[in-house]
Length: 634
Image 1 (cartoon, rainbow, N blue to C red):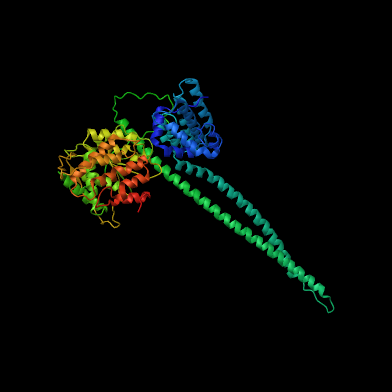
Image 2: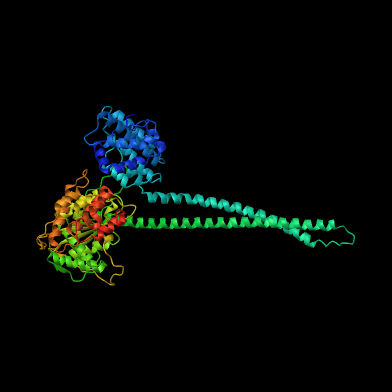
């Protein structure tokens, strides 16, 4: 068998993860398995080849040879490729031990590599690789593995990540569902065990009842026995014998009484355990029924949508071909774009950036944002809207802020779409939004895209870019927080900032019955909105230095978008608290550094506790972000 070598695409993907993530992956292989890898891991000076104490150093050596830029010597590179594959396979066999036939599928990949490519081992047997991940996808629905484990296996694999593999991973059964179904399958056995215990307890109680009855008869006989007549001269040892007999009976009664009490207590305890198990089963069953009901309702809605689309195809549509192949493993639900339900007061026409910022400030204050933070955030949102037309909001009030922002700037021309969990079809997002908005009458439109991180953002990014390029539309997206969400990634920042709303200054007691007012912005051009209010020059060179803090990573598109935002904000904002660099740090630098894994000490040094080169003002939002992450020094 020949072990597959990592492809160039896989090497680039693993390099992007960084040494820290790769070393964490290596350390997830247990010591017992690691000892078996000592034969293939690179050796290091000062340690014997079979020394377990050399494992950390040898893993570091593997990273050095495997990820060395410019290429390592051929012998070292081949040895490192072999060691990495063996370590990846050991991880799979340890963390997917419940998967049936895993070793055979991995052997099939190695056999296919040796058979099909005896000379060029860098080529990958794609059919066998897809068979492995298709089997893992099926095994997840048998509760033998979870989607998160499969995703990690693919993420660190030496194979290319194709659309087919990503679709299989994203549509697998998540860990939460696997654990829930495992608990449901175990509960009937637990109930059967408790039933058997109850039967045994019943037998114990019946046996002890017989013992108590026998003792009761004995006591009754003793009570009915006539009292002996003690004549004078009778020896005292006869009385002592009677007393001894009565004492023995009393002791036996006490012993059996204690046994009955112990059995009774045990029976009560076990009955309570059975009752708790039954309650757990009822709760899980109720939860399963609720989930099934919701899922059925969603399926019915999707079927209704399909029927409506089929009806619109017309009478002359050709008949659908007969399906001869097996059905697709994963479904791809489309995004449903619907108008945002709203009660609009008279819509205010917005001709300038000052008017737009004032309405945003008023609406944010109605939601509970305190002054002057509401005005500062309104200026940042407006600058993001006119430069990139996209912004992302996260936090507990993200949905309310997103809808208020859209209504403030687009009035009645607002639609929304909620991203479902998993794989989603966004191919027609741009045309669906334009159709749903209808005639805009010279004003802009807005899309509120909720829970955008429920699906891989690669599926949505191009559709969003097409939408904002071809139509006068802004996109306000929200990020969800849950176990089924995908991690934040720099691709967000290529389109717009990521604002964490939880660090804004919210009022605990907002005004009652406050309403959001609607506005209509005629243009997204800063010049047309007269947003050149000052001649201040943004510190773009400093911003670029900070964006390039990690010398191993550069993203020119993020640099372009962030610089445009900072320059627009600098010319529009008339005050210096916060500075445009502090605002850009809040929306771009902080999320970018956290996404790329920049060292916490570097983040703290650059942000300087929220000062970031301002002599007079500390941005409390940056301060709170540092505190929440636990990396701010006093």
